[in-house]
Length: 273
Length: 341
Image (cartoon, rainbow over all chains, first blue to last red; front, side, top):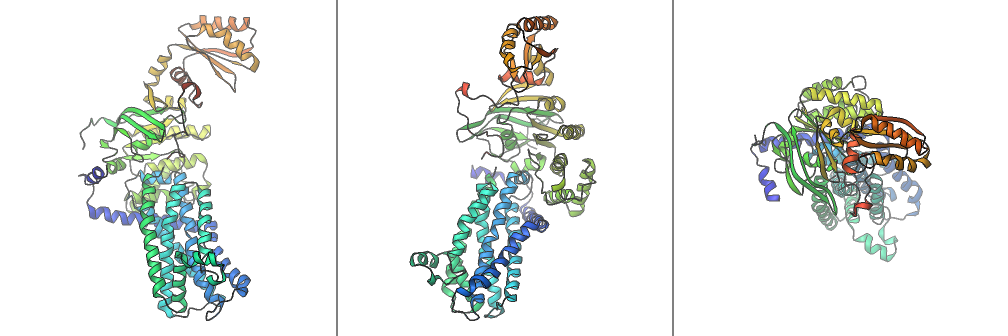
C-alpha cells in the first residue's frame, strides 16, 4: 500500500516538487497566522498562557521562596526563574493539545484535510504558532522576573542560550501534546491528561526546589528525568557553572522526544477522524 | 484525464469499510451524473458519513473502488481534493475569526493570492447573504449563518463536486428553508452535489436521484417518484390521542392494509399502506375504527411520502434508531459521525 501511494504521488497532474515545497511553506505560514490571530482574540487563552506563569513567579518568589534554602548567587529568585521558564514552556503545550482536539471535534481538521493544501501544514503551522506564543510568554515572564529581583549572571550569550533551550524543549513537549490532542480527541480529557503528566514531571524536578531537599526515593526520579536535565542546563546558562554533561543529556532527551512523537503526531493527524 | 465516463462525477463500486467489528459499509454502489443532485438518505449510523468521508479522501475504503471527478479517491487523492468541496455536520469554521477572515484563510490555502482570496471572500459573503455580519466574529453568528459561512467556505475553491453531509441537521425550520434556497441556487449553476440527510422531505425537495442506505447497504435507489411508487399505493393515516386505544386501533385497521401498520409512539399517529384501495379503504377504515370504539382524529388518505417508503423498505422509520435486537446482529457505537475512529 505504501509503495503504491508513493508512486501515485508522482502522478502526472501533480504540480512539480518545487511548487509543492513553496505551497508547504506558504500553507504553514497561513495556518500559523490563523492560529496567532485566534490566540490574540481570546482573552482566556492569553490569561492562561501569560497570567498563570506570572502568578507562579510571584507566588514562588514571595510565598514559598523564603522557606526554600538555595546556594545560588542572588538568592532564590535567581534559582527560581530558569525553573519557572522551563515549566512555562512545558505548560504552554496545553494549548496545543486542546486546540487540536477542538479543531478535530468541530470538523475543522476534516475540512482542511479535504483541501488541496500541504498535508504537513496544519501540524507545522500549529507548532510554529505555539512556539512563537511560548517565546512571547517566556520573554514576559523574564520581564516580570527582572521586576522582582532576578538577574542573569552569565552574560547575554548565556541568556539567549537559556531562552533558546527552553523554546526547543517546549517544541518537543508540543509534539507530545499534539499527539495526545489528536489521539484523545476530547478536550476535557486532553486537559485532564495533560495535568496528569505535566504537573508531576515539572514539579518533581529541580525547577522549584533543590532536589536534595526531597526524600531519597523521589530524588532518584527527580535527578534522572528530562525536565531536570533541561532546567539544570538552563540554570547553568543563566547563572554560570558546569554545563556540558546536562546539556548533552538535554539534547539527547529532546531529540528522542522529537523522534518518537513528531511521527506519532503526523500519523494521528493523517488518520484523524 | 483518467478514462472514465466523463458524464459521471461520482462513482463508487462495492465500497466497504469496517471499524473494528462494526461493518459501517457493506458494499456501496453509487453513480452521480455531472450536474445532478444525489440525496443519500438514511438514519443515524446507516453509513452516510462514512461514505462521504471515503469519497472526500478522509478515510480509506477497505474494499471496492471510488472515483470522483475522474480520479481514484485512494490513488489520486490529491487530484480529488482539487475537485471537491466538503461541508460536514457541524460548522467547521474558526469562531474567533470573522466571516471574512475565515474565507480569506481558506482562499490562501487554495493557493489564491491575497487579493484573489479577498475578492473571493467578498463574492461569497454577498452570495450567501453574510455581508452585514462579514466583519464580526463568527462566534456571534446564528446557527443558520454559521452553516451558510461553512457552506461558503466549502465553495472557495470553485469545486466541481460538492459534498454536503447533513447540511441542515440542527437548524431551525426557517434556516433550513433558507439553506435549501442556497443549495438550489448552487445546483442551478451546475455544481454536482452529493447530499446526505435523514430528512426525507429534504431529499424530496433537493435531490434528482435518491439512494436509501440502511446499515451499510444501499437498499433502494431511484427518483423520489419511483421510490414512492414502490410503496405501491396510498396511505391511510390518522391519530389516536388516547394511548390506551392504540392497540385497539391497530387491531381494527390491520386487515385493511397491505403491510404492517406503523405507530409513532409519541404522537399516536398511525399509518398503513392500503394499496389501490382508494376511498373504499377510507370508508372501511372509518367503519372499522368506529366499530372498535376508537376515537381517531385527522383520518386521511394520502399519496405516500418518502417516510412511508423508508418504512416499507426497512421496517423502521428514518428518524428512529433501528431496532437491533430482532436482527441478532451486534452493533457497536454508531459508525456514522464524530465518535468513530
